[in-house]
Image 1 (cartoon, rainbow, N blue to C red):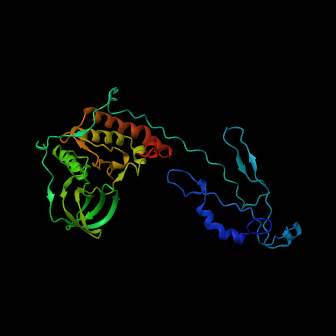
Image 2: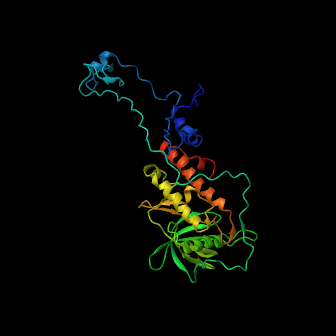
Image 3: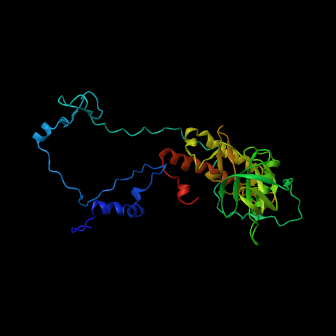
Length: 350
């Protein structure tokens, strides 16, 4: 620090890492949905370099490398049109001089036809819906065939897609080089829901009713699972599902709904087919909606699902969930993607 209380240029360079750690919000890294520009740092300290005296006109004329003087540009306004002034160089500007670039006009808004809901809005629910509770009749047989139990299952780890305290989703390769999704569940704690059993019951109902917009479940992997390259042995259970290549979630690529608004209707109708099988998704958010390269929609992650074969589910739950998905996509996700902002469902922690 110099006697005036300012940092010199060499001290300012040493302070740069600390300044980067305490940078303000307008110096953040660019976000893919915001037009944030990183402001340049402004140093108000005196430079340690020696100031050079200003050059005179005689020095400029005598220097062989001196650049020719240029006059500023003057605006030329065409009275015949109402557009903005066009800046042209004056006659004394050399041929190599370039006029300043006029400001760009804002892009024209995308006018899309309003989306019409594929279903009528649900009736106003004045009373409280009954809770979704499991059936207490354990002796009652399930109307659907149980999923196949895969014994002595082995596979090779490819990559980890997602891991949460509730489950881990892995991309694995079978001995015949077929790629599958392996969703692993830890052993259920006493007094808590068995997530693997409930999701297996949902896939059994979907397979029985031949719902085509969900991945096919090939069976349940029980006991110790050998996943080469990921862990020595996973003591729990898992589900082996189909892998959908080249598919992205609506949360990761919402612009696909802007380019093709018919996908919103396809997602709502696919959810209606799931409801017709007696399965309530329970987590119908954009992170669980997939769109593949052929614009086919998929619903995944039935860890929060409830089926009418194992639970008491009021029919108004199905109606409300289907309408909520259309309202979320048409009135929040699509407008946010069109305007380049974060949707509200993500801000409120959906």
